[in-house]
Length: 109
Image (tube, rainbow, N blue to C red; front, side):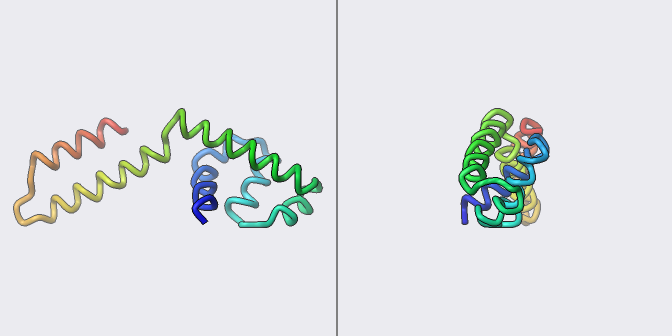
């Protein structure tokens, strides 16, 4: 399940950088949760070719994430925004803590 979620995130962020054929194969796996056999039949290629394409695309998309860190930055932004909201809901908001979180957000974007 974790691999499916990771592939979905990678596809959401970087799928547009794939060729149309590879994009369709990866989308069928990552978004539509199709089996290798189903994808192979749809694409008119062997299961082995589908498997190899997915392996290569996993490496390529993970490489993009390693370099650009868009998913990691997005997650960190979500954490910071949540922390700011929680700090603002305190009876006596800690302005230094909020300022620190806002500076961290500024550094991410």
